[in-house]
Amino acid sequence: MFEPLKAYFLSTDNCPTVLKQFFQNPISEAWMWFVHNIASLFHKVILDVEGDKICATEAALEYFELINKLQNRLNELYLPLKVRESLSKLENMGDIDRSVNYRDIFIMHVKQFYSNCVTYLKNWSENLSELKLFGWVNLKKQVSWAEILSSCEAFKDYIGPILNQDELFDEVSLIRTNVTEDKIVDWNSRNISTEDRWLEVFQKESALKNLKILCEFVFCLPGTSASLERLFSNINNYWSPDKSQLKISTLEAIMQVYTNFKVSCNEMFQFLKSETQLLKEIHGSKKYDWYQNDDQNFLAGTSKEN
Image (cartoon, rainbow, N blue to C red; front, side, top):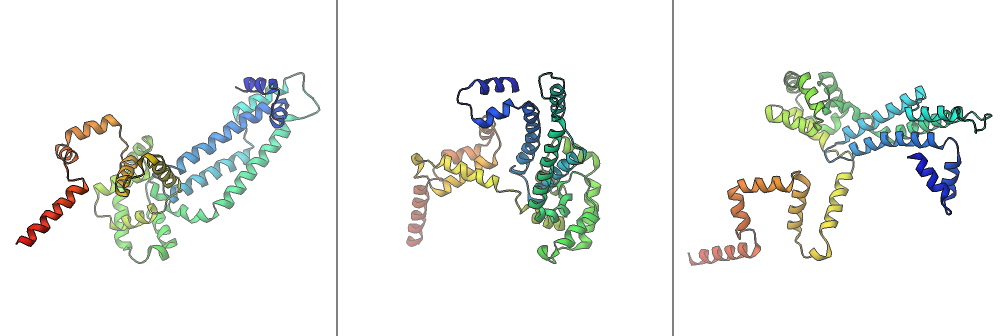
């Protein structure tokens, strides 16, 4: 991909100066592979933290994992495979300036890049450090009483005295019995969301009221505002000038279906075919305001007669 891009921009008469200088630089291919590698690393984290089912704790853990990956790359001065191959190819070329050590220059800039990324992310995520105490909530491994106790102690002023720690300890013991290592491995292999993992736990075990309080506390904090922004974007796309007379209640119902029902049109069609009572209500008149008003007027008249 690099060579076609280089040929295109260098053959263009009005090529921007910055691009012309970039492609004329012998080390430009190595930089392109490096940026591609780093971009994919950041892109994965962005996709995860901007998901619909992610809380602040999960988002914080994603940020700290990214920091660790970048710190490890800094410590080892890691260069991706394609970058190393590009630098080796450059060193074997006969038409470059041998007085310039391109590899050392490249590594120097890469080191500075990693360092700047780590410093920036650490400063940006400093206020999220305490959320790591709730790392157990993602159920990526078996929970421990020590982890849960630490999170309770750190956030006791926010959670309040509503937790019964004796009962909570018994609930944690029950969770450890039912949520086995094999179960967690299965969840991880199927990439089950944290929300759905706890939903499965609470459906099987109803006597977990203290753990429910903790989970409610954690899950009420959204990871980002991305899901809300997507909802407003969908509202703007649907509530067009042609549909300006759409009632708020109707728009709300449409958005609830659009956001929460992750099924295809064919799956929804098959579902509706099997729900006879729902079909009757769809074809009936009870959903219209005029029907409800007529019904209320009828009842009012009957009341007066009596």
